[in-house]
Length: 116
Image 1 (tube, rainbow, N blue to C red):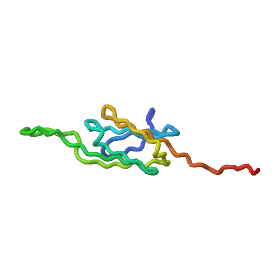
Image 2: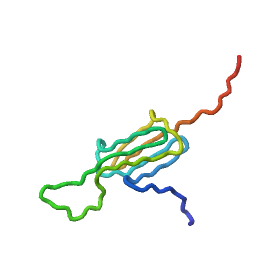
Image 3: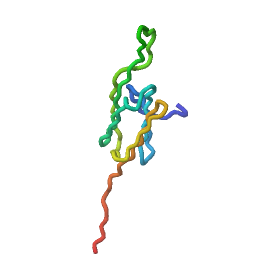
Image 4: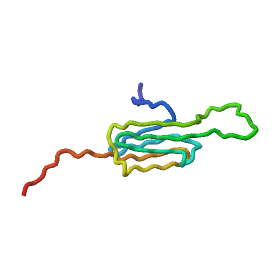
């Protein structure tokens, strides 16, 4: 298996990539043909939820011969290994790709206080 890395695979729609940069998680979701108002993103603790709905193109009087693209509602939750700073999450939707930046919330450890 030269040149291969072990990866977790997430099944279901939409297909996503999730990258850990150390301080941030970067999530990319493949959502071609959708409008921004059809995509709903929420974040809570260690969970990111992506919801939406995509309808097929309908032409009056025409009948579809082949439909390979997925349509309908979707609801996908991604569970992260660390909590994130919800107030600093940002998202962009460009050319059918949703890119979400999820800064990690660093848990503070014990702190030494000097006594005066």
